[in-house]
Image (cartoon, rainbow, N blue to C red; front, side, top):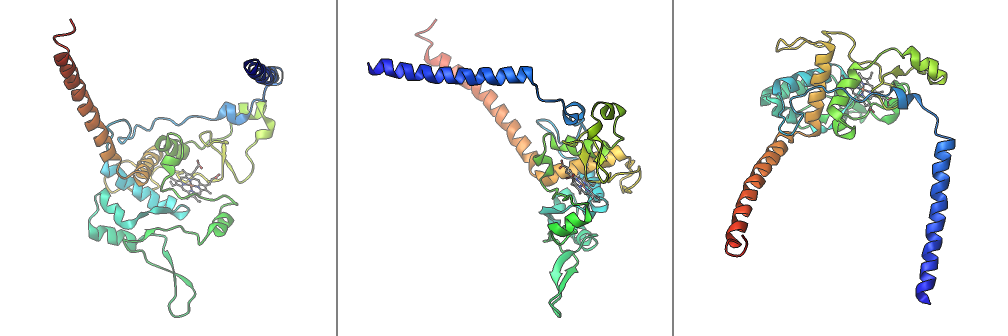
Length: 280
Ligand code: HEC
């Protein structure tokens, strides 16, 4: 008796779920969601072939230094790196005094308080400071950027799918809106104040193209500062800020795989040894 009731209740549930599924599927077929410009024109990042990519990738210190220069001269005007201290730049191959000089000469100063008047002021950076934002707060940041907020870039390459390649593609991806897009989606015209960029999720980004011409940054190591090169270098640099210990992680992964491979052979040998007299 109890069993029959339980079966009936179960069957009732299955029936209701079946109806719901049928409803969903038939609506999806009879009245599909309209195609959107984002869906059709959004592009996945191009492979920037950074040396840190892949299972055993390593950083190229020279490239990270170039990326830091691009960040310093271009991106720092709008974006902070609040999880990175100036002294961390020592890991890129700078000496202590070079780090000090770098912090001292940094284009954006640290917010502080004037000890005499108590008013808000700024002071030069020291190695223990975090890389500052040029804006006192979000309101000021939005006011200066057409109501968009330039996000902190410390963890950006982790916060976006395929982050390093994404940053490089985004920086070089600015272009005119394709005529085909406008023909198909007349309502999707890029609003004034935004910029068409197919690598950005909704195709229109508030950031004006930061890298506008080859040679915008002068490199000390003789590398040609093409737009693509600067984009790759700053993407490599932001990969480092997001995961400075990437190399030791890759190293540990490789060591583990080698260890496990040897371990498999040892276990196989032990297994055969133990069962030698029993199994043939
Ligand atoms: C003039 C100010 C300005 C400069 C200079 C600038 N950015 Fe931006 N950036 C912005 C703003 C504003 C946004 C927010 C865009 C939005 O939400 O539409 C942004 C967003 C971003 C994003 C996030 C995109 C996303 O997926 O959300 C990245 C990555 C980025 N910038 C990287 C850089 C790099 C790298 C540089 C230097 C080469 C740089 N930016 C220079 C203003 C700037």
